[in-house]
Length: 588
Image (cartoon, rainbow, N blue to C red; front, top):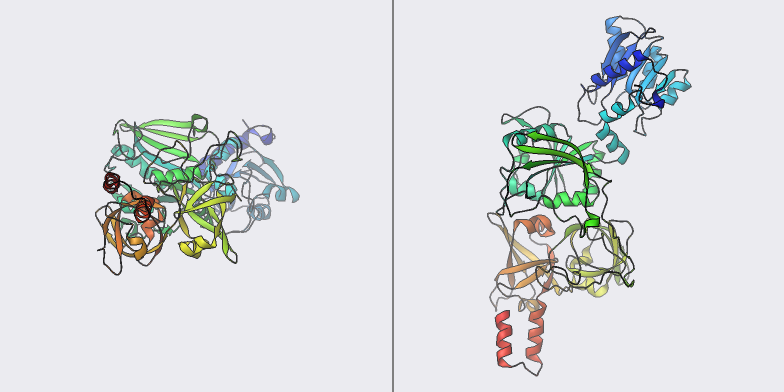
C-alpha cells in the first residue's frame, strides 16, 4: 500500500491522505511549466485539517495553499502537524519562496512525500527538512505520484519538451490522398478528440509545408468555436507564414522557429518553459523528429478506410531491413466514433539510426559506395561550424538522416556539392573539407553557422534511382531573379552565366542546390542575360531550402553532364555516325 520500502513507516491515515492529495493534484492544469501537486495537513491523530493544490504557474504551491486553508478554517497554528504532499517540497526560490521554509516556519514536524522532485534546481527538499529536525518519509504511493507528472518530469530531466506525435491514417497507412487532400480521413468524434489532445499540451507544432498547404488554425475548438486556454502554435522551417494565414488570426500565440532541426526547435521551446509538444506536422517532419530520437509517444487515429495511394503517414526513418524496425509498445487502445485511437511509445528510447555493420570502408563486408547522386534531397541540414583556412575551409554540418550510415570517406552532397566525410564529431553531425576550387565555384564560400543546406547521400550500388544522374560537381552559381506563386506550386526564375546557359534546355534536367529539377522554360538563345525557369511542387517547397530562397539568392548549379559530353564529342573527332548523333539528340 505504501509504494514499497521507500514509503515504509507511513501510517494508514497518511496513506489515505496521500490518495486524497493525489486527487487534489489532478485538479491542477495538465499544461504549464510546473508540476501538479496536492497537499493534506493532518493532526497528531491523523485527522485531516486542511488541504490545497497547485493551480498553475504564479499561484501558491500546494503546501502554501494548504497552510492558507488551515488558517482560513481554524485560524490556528500548524505546529506539530503532518504535511502529506505528492511531490518533494522544493528548496529553491522561483516565482515564490521555498516550500521547505514555509513548512518549517509554520511548525510542521513531519512530512510524508509521494515522489522525489526530478528537477535538480528544486530537489533536495527532504534533506533540507531532515537537517532542520523534521521527520520525513519519501515514497508513499510513489508509482502513482510519479505517473501524475510523468511528462513534466521527463521534460525537466531531458531539458527539452515531451513530444507526442499525433497522426491520422487509413488502414493502408496513408495520411492524404494522391492529390494531397486529407479532409477528412477520420470521423468527427476523432477530430473532437484531437482538440482534447491539443488542450493537454503546451504547444502544437507543424512545419511550414503543412502551414502553407493546409492553412490550419491549430487551436482548441469545441462546437466550432475557439474555447478555453490555447496552446502555443509553433511553425518550424524557413519559409514565411503568410499574413492572411489562420495561424495569424490572433486566437492563440504563434512562434515561428526558422530551423529544420528538431533538437534545436525543442531546445528553443524548452528555454520558454514549454514542457509538452503535440507534433501535428506531415510525414517528413514526423520522420525527422523520429530520426532525431525525440518522439516520446504516438497517438494514432486509425480510420477504417483505404486510399491505395498518396503520402505515407511517416517519411523515411532510415530503416532498410527488419532488424532496424522501429517497434512501439501499446499503452492504450480505444474506439473513438468509427475510428480506433492507439497510444504507443517506443519500445526502446528513440535515437538517431546508427550503422550496424562495419564502419571501416575498406572492410571486406563494408557496403560498396558510389559517388553518384540522384538530386532527390533527403533532408535539410544545418551548418554548425566553419573553420576557414588560407585556401580551404572545414565545415561541420548537422543531418541526422545522412549521418545514419556515414563513415570516414563517405560522400554527401551539400547544396549539390559532393564532399567527403572526414570526421563525425557527434552521431548527428559530420565534418568535410572544402577545397579552394569548390569555394570559388560554389556558394559554400559564404557558408556560416546556422545556414540551412540540402543534403543527400551518394546512391548505393543497386539502389533505386530517381531524379537524374548528378555528380555533385557544381559547374557554377546562378541567382534567383523572380518567384511566381501558382495554385499549388511556384515558378522560380534563375539567372545563369552564358557559358552554362547552352547546356540548359526546355524539358531538360538541371540541379539547383542539389535538387533535381525539370526545366520548364528558357530564355532566347541570343538573350544577353540568360535565364531558365523551374516549377517547384509542394514537396520540393517543403523538403528543400528552395522554398525559402528569395530573389537575389545565389544557388549552386550543375547542368546535365550528358549535354557536356555530347558537345565535347561534337567538337573533337572522330565524329559519331549520323544515326548515332540523331539518336543522342532525340534522347536529349
